[in-house]
Every structure is written in structure tokens, then in C-alpha cells.
Length: 143
Image 1 (cartoon, one colour):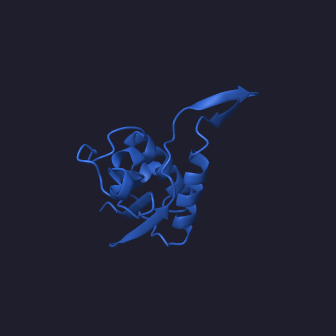
Image 2 (image 1 turned 90 degrees about the vertical axis):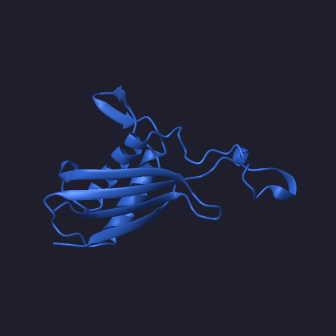
Image 3 (image 1 turned 120 degrees about the vertical axis):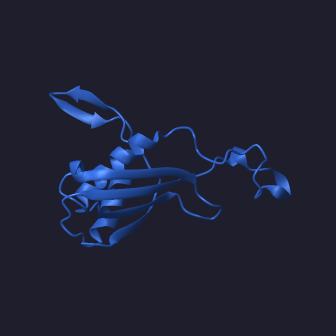
């Protein structure tokens, strides 16, 4: 068993946060962005064939959009300010992005249970100019 499956997902990465009680024992996600993100990841995963690995390694690079405030104005509006941060060290939390993405990978058939993920490497980066937000995900055997 070797190799890996690479999935490039377009969309806005959304964290899986808290759930709230809505009555009669029903719980719903607090964020409305989680469902579209999970669907995008699951749909992208279903286009691939995964081996039934018992132990899974996942690497994910989450591409987040830069705020407009990171760019200059006027005719230099395409140029980053000197003060623009290199990494998105702010919301959303990396661990919560991983939670929603692992659940979606399971829904898309990458593995039967996200408990099979024994190695997880995750990164938050800003999408390059002209690049769509989303995630590049690699799923492989951990052996």
C-alpha cells in the first residue's frame, strides 16, 4: 500500500464549531458556513478511489482569502502593504477547520472513521492573488 490521493477543494474553509440545542433533542451547527464547506470536500472526495487503509495520514493546506485591508489603494491596489501579515494567525482556528474537513472526508469515503487518522498535518495560508480559497488535501496510508 503506497501512494496518496490529492484533493483540491474550492470554497471557503469553514470551522466546525459549537452546536446549539434547538429543542426536542435536536442540535444544529452554529455556523451556516460549515455545511457548504463539508459538502464541497465530500463531493471532491467522492471523485477519487481510496484504498481501505487501516491507518491514515492527512495533510491539509487551507487557503484563506486575504482581507482587502492588506492591500494598498488606488493604482497600487494589487500590491500588498508592508504591514500585511504573512500568515492568517486569526479566525478561523486551525483545529476547527480540521474537524470539519475530516468529517467531510469521512462522508466522501476517504476512510470509514476519522479515528483512523493517526497523523495530521495542517497549515493555514493566504491564497495567492488570483487563487481561489479552499484547501489542498492529501490522504495516504500512515504505514
